[in-house]
Length: 287
Image (cartoon, rainbow, N blue to C red):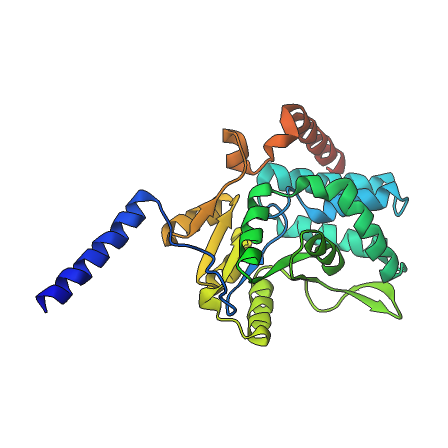
């Protein structure tokens, strides 16, 4: 009994020492077929909003007018300056995107999405988050994007990054043509958690052995599902929540201001100032 108690105490002390030193046990676990990883997209895997970058590409191809691009620019400026998703702005962005693609063929948008990824998105992938995803893949685990962005965009990004697949918001199409409506609701907040739960059941996954990654407090339901939640480039609410629950945290933004409000440092001071001025001007014009 004495030997057993001494052994248990040594093991407990060893565990505490690891925690104090900041070292973590090996993760992800190699060859764990019942584990997988789920990654949010905007500001977690990619700097900024994927829908905005997609909109830039469509504007370049004459899908819509300059005034519509100004609306996209305002929404993106808010996203980058505030560092969190505003439900009203996200809804406006989705409505704008749906009206723009209405009447176009799904195959056409999928093909254009490949081009837009190369033009605007590839250079905005966070290397640190990409490395986390690759670690799961190298361990033999599946990795999915889970995002409110259109599923066609998410699938392109997942394929280009070598991920397993993507869950995203589904736009209705009839005979391969977009109708301008959604199938159900946007994949946002609690809906992400439900999608992950359903996918895990279909894939035979143990969620307690899975990981999830996000920057937004809106994804707390999804992060709370898994045994290994990560806050990546977190907004203030998620950072506070993650610290309280001792979730792992990674911030790939550099500079004090970037860490505070979520502006990619690579954007530079000039770009930030320009974006701020444009946002203020647009806001005054709207008022």
